[in-house]
Amino acid sequence: MSCDKDPKKIKEMFDEISPYYDQMNNKISLGTHYLIKILAIKKLGIKPRSTILDLCCGTGDFSKIISKISPKTKVIGLDISENMLKLAKNKNPKMCFLKGDCTELAFKDNEFDYITIGFGLRNIQNRSQALSEIYRTLKTDGKFLHLDFGNSKFIGKIFDILVPIIVKFSGKNSDNYKYLLQSKNEFPTPDELISEFETHGFKYISKQDYLFGIISAQIMKK
Image 1: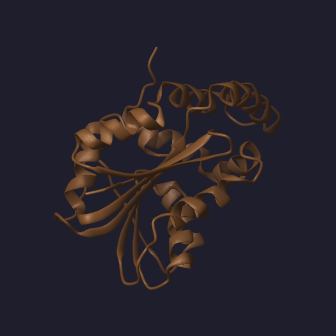
Image 2: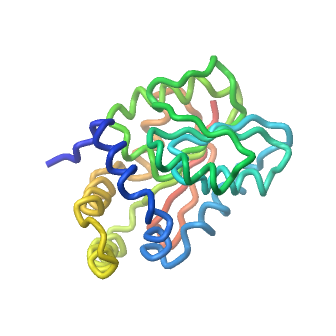
């Protein structure tokens, strides 16, 4: 059975888990997720005075990292969950965060030098439309960074066992994390994603795996 990715349900789920989202990410990743995000963003080689759109920004980790690595940039974070955006604004009070849908971006064509999405594309019902919107709003020669789970089957199975245990001992809603595991396991592999990105017009630049392939970053160019 495929995951139910109805936008309303996804929004409600992330609104619900927002108070403990960062805490659980730290537990599940053993504190490595933030470092991986830093390493992936550094691969972009962001130039000063660039304009960057951080999609599915969640609590604002990517946006915060980008602003630290390249402070002379304009970063806009966008997410469907109001509760996640509130946390992002608390973390980054001087930055711009907007509520929005990745499949209907309220931006003009060729507006951004870079577009990033970390652990979010997997939750979008109409992934093809989201990729079309990313391509439309990215400048010619602009870069697109996607970061999410990779293709490590053996370690992935260990992850599938450990997450329910961590969630149980943390006293959180296990249904939300069952969705996490199911969506991870149904998501295309990094190589499959690269092919999918290319069908939307993107050109391949690089792929980088982290934690023995548990996490993977792909960088594409318009």
